[in-house]
Image (cartoon, rainbow, N blue to C red; front, top):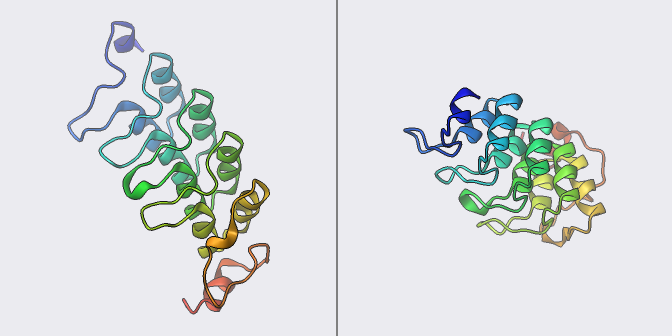
Length: 169
C-alpha cells in the first residue's frame, strides 16, 4: 500500500515480465489483488503469453479471486497461449462453479482454442459433468464432440469410469 500511495506502478513488470496482479492471483493473495486493482492494475493484462490473472484463477479453482477480477471488469473472453480463454481453463480443470460464474459474466461458451477445442469439448473429455451441464444450460453447442464412442454429457460417470470407457486406464 505504501508504495502504491507514492505512485509505484501497479503494472510494473518483474524480471520474468510478470505483473504484480498475476503474482497475486497465482498465490491467491486476495487482499493484495484487491489493493492492486484499486490502484489501477490492469485486471485483464496478459503476462508473456501465460494468461491473465483470470486465467490463473480459473485454472487453479480460486472462485473468490475469479469473482474479484470479474467484479473489476476483467475480460472473461481474453485469450492466452493456444487461444485459451478463462472458460477453457476452468472447464479443462473441472472447476464447475467458476465455469458457471464465467458464463454468467458473458464468457463465450463456444469459443475455440488453436486446436479447435471448445470449453465443452475439454470438460467432456475430462468427465467434468458440472461444467458440461453449465455449458449446455447456457446454450453451448455439444456437436463439437466427434467420436463413435460418444456418451451424453449428463451421464454420471466418475472420472475413473470415464477413463476406463475411453481406454485411458
